[in-house]
Structures are given as structure tokens and as C-alpha cells.
Image (cartoon, rainbow, N blue to C red; front, side, top):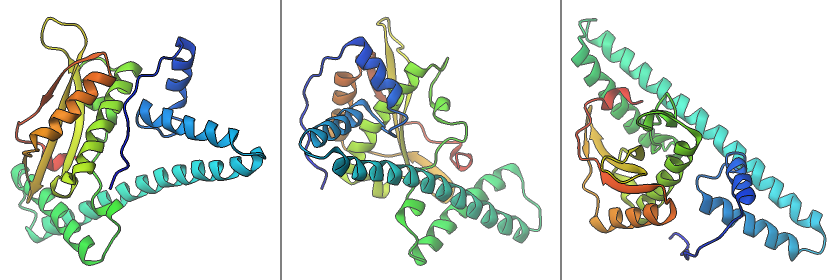
Length: 247
């Protein structure tokens, strides 16, 4: 069960805010909350340890493990893609090469389902089988309009809030993909809008998941409270017509 967390306001100088934003990618932190908590744990541990070297050793170990976990996740994504492409190839061969664009979409989705079923039979790690597909072009493809470091930071933090609430409520077990996208605010007010997206999929088809209302309400409250530049949060109910190509 996730650890309960408390909300409070932190005031930072412009210099401290700049340092935090520059250091977040180096620490593999997905949000400012995660970075702040890690910084507090580090400094409190340092102050309560008589010999600094006794504390620095496990901290360095945690950083190394975090880097290795990130590298392992990258390898897992590539292995999954390779398995899907191989399964798709055998399906094309079985179809005697008479494959049109619509058939190719269906075969790709079917290959994904086959790889996942086989992985479950082989008891492969959930880090491989339950991973979320990530856009090949990177996070920038989920920013509508011009891309900037500020927009990417806002999107990364909003996406982390959404993922935390999904995991906390156990909804990830039935979802193929869930993420946040960022766009300009469509009304007259300034700022930006976050578009939440969650899909269920099977056999080459994907459709918007019916998430509990209290979940989306919590996500909206967190985003509006902790990312001041975001003025609107919406949930996308559009069916996914490009599901088979997102991998």
C-alpha cells in the first residue's frame, strides 16, 4: 500500500528553484515533489550521521541502482519491441504475403497480444510485460505546439501525478496505456491545459477507459494546485485509431 503523504507549501528563492530544476533529470526525479523529498532525506540523514562517509556510501549505492534500473527498463522496452516484430513477421508469412494496410494494423495488435500471453506463460517480469508503450519520438510528441524545457517539466510532473493515482487505485492492471499530454488553454485565460488519456486494448483495438470519477478528480486537484501554469484539466474519450503503431 502506498505511503501516505502530506501536502504543504514550500517557498524557494529563484536560485534554489533553478538549481532544483537543473538537478531533477540527473537524479531521475519525475516531479518536484520527488526531488524535494529525496533532498530532505539526504540532508536529514547527513545531519544525523556522525561520520559522513557512513551515510554517503548507501546514498551512492541508491543512485547507482536508480541508473541501472533505468538502463534495464530501456533494454526491456527494446526486447519487447523485438518480440512483437518477430511475431508480426511470422503472421505475415502465414498470410502468404497478401497483407494490406488494414490487415497489417490488425496483425501488429495481434502480435502484441501473443507476446504478452507468452510472457505470462513464461512468468517473465512485470517490468517487461506490464510496461507502458512510450512514443518513439519521446515526451515531446505529447506536447501540442512548440516544445520548450518549461513545457516538458510541467508535462513530466503532471504525468507523474496521474501515474501515482493510477497505481494507488490499482487501475493499472486493466489499462494498456495511461499518460498526460499538454496543450495551450483553449479558452481566454492564460496558461496551459493537461489532457489525461487512459486506454484499454485487445486484439488491435483500443478505447478510452472508464476511470473512477474520484480518481480523475484527485489528479485534477493535484495538477491545478501544484502546477500553477496549468489552468484546465480534461479527460480524452476519443477511441484510439492509431493504437497498433504506438509501440
